[in-house]
Image (cartoon, rainbow, N blue to C red; front, side):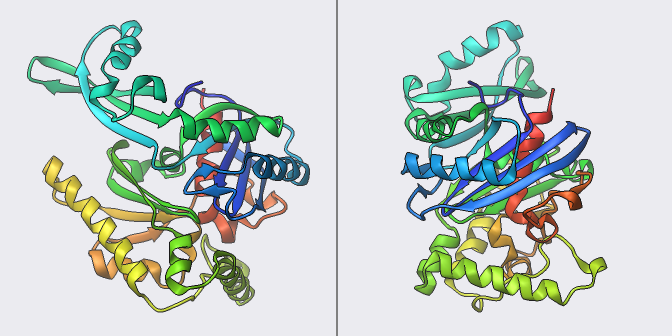
Length: 355
């Protein structure tokens, strides 16, 4: 099994309290949406991207497949937890047929995980000038095997086949328009269980972070159950959607006004600011063009404006359907309204269409 190999057109995300799936057909340059769905699970079944209750997740997956009627049992599984690591490294230019072995031999220099305890893969991003001539620029991806195995057990117990395993933050890249990949952007996915940050410049991931700062931590700050907070998001979104004309139905429309900005928002702004500062310090770049937020947290009212004022960088909500045809035809979930929630899952499905 490898992170960056291609198979299938079904994206699957296991989040705290919820599982999401998206099915696509066609080819990667002209995909069509054929199915999408979600199902709630016990809050403790998945914690910060790690499956803790294999049986509960497997039962939910079986029910979700029956509800969405997705024909394919092969999935692209997204993973995101503290055990998923990415590095961008320059490596001597050697024949590709020797590269994988050479990288595995030196994996310990890039990741603080013993080789026997990790699942490891790579992708060549291009070539750069080095001190001794051209070098390969390589994206390295690793995951702790024990944490990954729990997700695989749940998927396989539901009679699904995980043909591809992909880092969830990388999946977001595939939902962006080509012109956005030419600039420098920070992708921030705020899910129920954690938040991922991925800084991309010229289409190349420069660095990634996973932080336990999520809607669940927001609920703790407010001293409210996560489900109660999410219910407020759903109710506010539905009410706002009723007030919109059809032409005003935009991704993320109907945000939830939960609480005025507080410590949670400030912490998130500080994490984003420090990530941008780190990137500029390490690379000498002078600016990041935009921050693009996704996940259910992107639908919290006022969050984009607050973040933009705090970090002085344009902030926008992702539209994962920008490259997708026939998105209005899918039943069971309104992706025009809930698109940010399904950004990772859509990107995972797009991964499955790649040849």
